[in-house]
Structures are given as structure tokens and as C-alpha cells.
Amino acid sequence: MRSGRARASWAAIGSLTVVLLLGGTGTAVAVPPPPPNPSDSELNSSREEADSRAGEVGRLTNQLAEAESRLGELQADVELKMEDANKARVDMETAQDEASAAQRDAESAGAEADAAASAVENARSDLDKFVGASYQQGSTIGSVSAYIGSDSPKDLLARAQLLNAVGGSQVDALEGMQRAQTDKSNKDAEARKKLEIAREKQAAAERAKSNADAAQNEAIRAQQDQEAENGRLESEKSDVERRLYEAQSKVSGLEGQRQRYEDWQAQKRAEEEEQARKAALAQQPSSGGSKGTKNGGSAGRPSAPSAPAGRSVESVIARAMSQLGVVYAWGGGNQSGPTRGIRDGGVADAHGDYRKIGFDCSGLMIYAFAGVKGLPHYSGYQYNAGPKVPLSQMRRGDMLFWGRGGRIHHVALYLGNGQMVEAPHSGSVVKVSPVRYGGIMPYATRLIG
Image 1 (cartoon, rainbow, N blue to C red):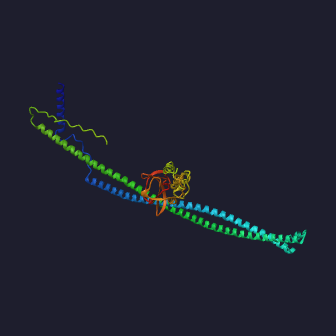
Image 2 (image 1 turned 90 degrees about the horizontal axis):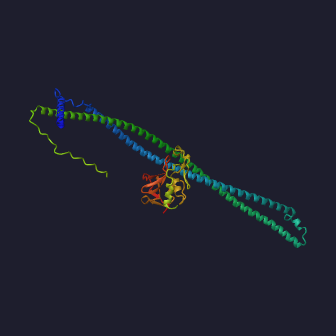
């Protein structure tokens, strides 16, 4: 009984639905009002705007890529100039030490020459007195007192010969002193000549340092100008990308509106077809009964998704790796560990390296190889510190170098598997990086094995 009443209720509801759908005139009332439908010209205009923005982004992307490449070259040039300045600083300090040593040698030689001259003058004065007195007394000085008390002519003759010998020895001593004075004067002249050469070298080294500093500053200015240009391009690209997004969003919005309108049209057509079918059924004469239809089978259940399918190389590397995270400081690092950086008049100063305790690239190598070999604090000299091997044969523990025109500006320690540990640049820290092959020197330097 209950199921019969339910069927009757659903039949009544179905009849009411048909009436509501057909209404008095047969027009559709189930379909909602139409959404906005953008015109073809609006769609085309928005697509053209998006294409234009995309082309502009592409152009700026190419410009930015070229600018980034140029900036990379300028960065390498700055690193090269910084290493040139580092080399000039090391050479200048060496020349200053040599000049100081030559100054000390010259002062010592001059003092010895002065002392020798004074001794000669004293000896010459004594000899002059001896000779003068001898002439006054008609014999050697002291002859009167020597002769008084002589017991015999033979004794008197012996004493005269002794006094003559004393006078002759004074002359010989004077000649020896004069020879010593000449030797010391020669040494003094040689020492002064060496001092003159050392001072010339010092002056040349100071000029080279000044020139290297000027070249470094010029490279830094070029890099800073390029960074400003890159920033301008980045800003312009970001602005165009924003406008591209807006244009693409506009296209998407208009295309979405067009799609929703087309969906509405499809829905409206389907509803009208359904209404027409039901109206046709309603106008047919009723039959004695109708047979219900049964589904021929149930829809298949979708399948579950499938499951988603010391002196050794190692001691050198251990020393370098123990400094990971230590800040970069230009001019920093020695065999004992990180040290305070020094001023460079440019990039390093801008990052405050002279206030930091850390390493630069060559300083890290000095510390890593401290138990193997003492290295100079300049990557160019480190490149020639040991045997060289082709990059195709490089192995763990070798030093890798980067340069341009045969001049070195960076060094790192190869770890194997395409990795290296380095102190890269101001503002960074000691870290492990993939080996960069752009600008790399064709040979690695091997200090062990």
C-alpha cells in the first residue's frame, strides 16, 4: 500500500513538472538568464594585447639574458682585477721588506766603513807623531830614553833595531787598515747600490699597486653600472609581466564568459528538446498500459587509481670542509684559519670585508694545504705551486682555477663528482658548489700524489 501511494505521489509531481515546463505557451522557464557574451572583436582585441605583451616579455627576457651574461663577464673581470690588486699588494709588501733589509745592510756597511776610516785616521796620526819625533831626535821616537842605560855598543845597536822594527810594524798596520777601509768602502758602495735597486723595485711595486687599484675601481664601476642596468631591465620586465598577466586574465575571463554562454546555449537547447519531446508524448493518445523499461545492466564501477609508481688528500679536504659557512673576507685566511679581511677600495669594502673574520679564495687554499705546502696569498702564484694535470684527469684534492687571458682570478678545491669547495666572493660564505666550466683554466694543480 505504501509503495502504491508513493508511486501516485511521484506521478502527480511529474505531471506538475510538465505543466510548469510547458507553461501556457510552451516557452522554457527552467533555463537561467543568459550570461554575458563577449563579442568576437573583444576576444580578438584581448588576444592581440596578450600576444603583444608576451612578445614584449620575450624581448625583455632576451635583453635581460644578455645583460646577465655581460654582468657575469664584468663580475669575472672584477674578480680578476681584485686578484691583480692582491698580487700587487703581495709584491709591494715583498719589495718593501727587501728595501728595508737593503736599508739595514747599507746602514751596517756604512757604519763599518766609517769605523774603518776612523781607525785608519787614528793609526795615521800615531804614525805621524812617531815619524815627527824621530826626525826631531834624529832617530825613532823614544830613542834617547832607549839609548840611555845601554851597557855596550852592541846593546845600543840592538835597541835601535828594535825601535826601527816597531816603526815599520806601525807602517804595515796602517797599510792593513787602509786595505780594510777600501774593502769596507766597496761593501758600503755595493750595499748602497742594492738599496737603490730595492727602492726602485719598491717604487715600481707601489706604482703597480696604484695602477691595479685604479683598474679594479674602474671594473667595479662598470659592474655597478651593469647591475643598475640589470635592475632597470628586471623592473621593466616585471612590469610587462604584470601587464601580460592582466591581459591573459582578461583573455581568460572573456573566453570563460564565452564558454559559459555557449554552455548556457547548449543547456537551453537540451531543455527545449526535452520539453518538445514531453509535449509530443502528452499529445499522443493514452494506451492501455505501458511497460516500464529496465536498465540492461549497471554502470561499471570505476577502477581504483593505481598506486603511484694531515698530508693526505682527505686531510686537506677535511680542513677545507671544516670551514663551511665561514664568511668571505677579501685578503683573509692563513695557515692557522680565518683572519680579518683587508680593504680593497671597492667591492670588498662595500661588503665590509675589512671588518670580517674569514677567508678569500686563495686564503682558504692556504689553510687547506697548511700541512702539505706553504702557499702564497695569490691565486696566480698558487696555480704554479705544483704539477699541472689536464682537467680530463683532475681528481679529488686538486686545485681548480679560473682566469681570462691567462690571468688567474679564482681558485677552488675539487671534491670529485663535479663538486668543489670554495670561498666565492664578497657577501658569500665558504660553501660547496658545482664546478663551473665557464672561464676555467685548462689545467688543475696537484700538490698531493
